[in-house]
Length: 217
Image 1 (cartoon, rainbow, N blue to C red):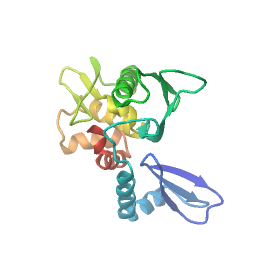
Image 2: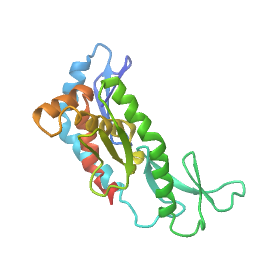
Image 3: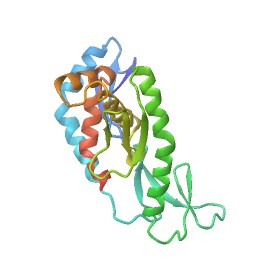
């Protein structure tokens, strides 16, 4: 949940952002504590809006020019290459080489996103591990179909490459979730207290994951 102060606002305002996170505007004279209480009172509304957002994000089996897919938490349209770029397509700032732009683009795009995740996710794991002083032996990025990540007792963190499609706050939560298992190898109350300590707004990320589980299919 993002809290933003606005001295011109006359009241607390709750909004659902395109990436599935909540934003609360704090008016002049307002407090963070009251903003959180306001969000909690409107929790059912937020869940309904998340459900509606998820319904709009149905994932087509085949991807083509014009298809919108999630990339870093935003709906991004697949576009044809510009300036005569033959055999290339664009996704946001990414340029991807493909054999046939008129064919199903999903396999080529998924391979590109997997490579991107392999490049970006392991350094983030090490960064968080250093901050929270937990030992990580290795980080792998895999094509997991039924889970976002896992952690072994030997200190190996495995992450789903599809995290590159999730919003940064969800990606960070999943990394912190797995790192917390290095202190508690279970899902006990102690484990969730550790998660809350390192990621206070983890419940918002959990709601996003539940609403967007279709990303794993």
